[in-house]
Length: 518
Image (cartoon, rainbow, N blue to C red; front, top):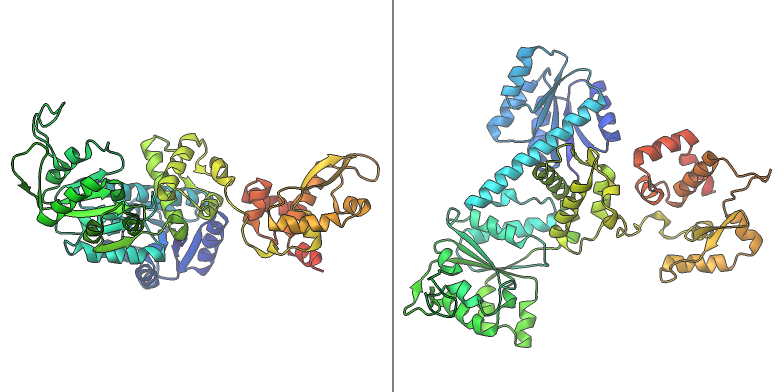
């Protein structure tokens, strides 16, 4: 779900003007004609609103009243106040009431865009700082989980229910989906929220050291044990122990882990007596433990001990609505951490492209991809050009041209220069669309193929002007992609704003589609 800008103004002309300008910049807008209507929208669609643009002078409930109500009810959405009365007292009062920025009408579109991007960036940074602080103190909650996808609602609901008890939890899901984040949210929502949260990746520890790391060891228990050391179980005493990749434990250690969970006590390596521990165990795996049980590589009794309350976290490709919010969050975070303060956010095209990628590495891959883009970006926002490795992996979308006409099939072929004419060359014949085009192209004789191609030479035997060729290419793309601007911009490798300008310059529009469709 894309976040929106809520425009609050009692002047309908002003509302439409702001909405039109922001839409051109790629923002989605909601409008309200007064303060009461704005608060009603805010209560119903809080998760959808990123920034509010608020007029101070309105007949029912003015802007100051809206700000006071938002502060009283705990809304943290950044507000940009605008008014025709720009006195210093008004500015000070609005800022004290919680406004993020102040602008005097008439506000230029560019000034408003900068203010919105700054507000979104500051909001994201403040949220990240609060999240880091709560993560360190063990008070991270499900409010800190960045998610707008419906499939995650069930995960969060189950997590909240599990947090209210001490029931053992098994988090299942692919690598990088955020299992540890959910585990921390469960800890922060439970009675153990201020107690230790200790993690152990069972697959990253040498097999010979796992027992010592889990249960601790006494001085002299083995070669190199020069001092006594407590294990993860003892570190987590009173709190939560998160065992990631639990399926990587050997069968011998699974026996000892089962006893520790059943009896609530551990045997340190080289110790003379057992030690009591009070912990809550949350385990996680990216493998199917039941299949491992059937294969004899995971103990059945331990499986049933751990799998009391399973929660499956869906991969990122199944909750694509989360991508814009996560991408903005990572952009703001890395821009701050890396000192790239000139980066204000992501372009609309970049967000659309990221939302179309399948993300085999899930959230971790998205995070690292944004990190790389932030480090390399010199502009004020991340664009498609900053994600070359993702651009190459975005598949052709399923649009109206999926069943092309005979003329459209021919354009699936790469073009090459021969005898001053652009002709067709066969490409990937494993693609069903290309196979259809190949069948069509095979039926063309030499004269038909030349007529279907775009010529570089005009009737006077001279090279055609560049603007004519560009207009013809853009018009062909407009018809081929059925007017889908995002796909056109991606395939032509130009920005959407540039594409819109050139289409207007060359007079390309709906009439071309109507003509092409007969």
